[in-house]
Length: 193
Image (cartoon, rainbow, N blue to C red):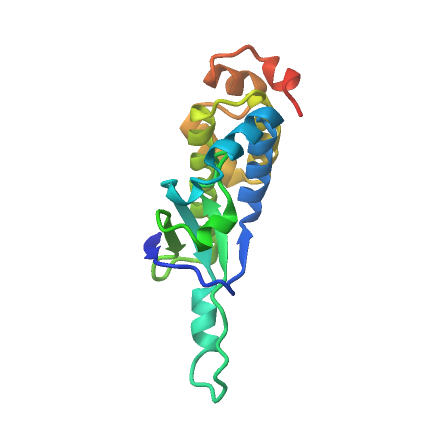
């Protein structure tokens, strides 16, 4: 996977979420109490611009190059971005991507000759690893809630099942997920939001 730093994201660029990232991020955010989230927003509201973050994105840069090849029109197609990883924290705000000078945005792209499927598999592995890393560092009231969406995503792909098993040493289960966080198995059901 190639990586390159994005210096800025144009205001007219569209920002969207990778489907797997969107689902996991939603699950991640539901696991915080509303009071905690309000407090975080209150504390960091004026400091989001100074927050050091590294965000991973993919873009339609290659398609835009083709679209913008010698044209008689002065209108150029925009490069649009998808958020892939680096966003699993309570203070992440996608609008900050356009304005934050402290933000490090890294664009991921396939290496030469890499198939679209192989690149997507690498992206999903990156998302999974970033999510698991963030969960292990999180201080959330309903940590067990994340098991359910994670299990759905992992079971949707044989490749992800293999990757998860390789990383965690077992297939995903409530018992294994609980043990990872030093908890009893029932916490994934008691904390479901």
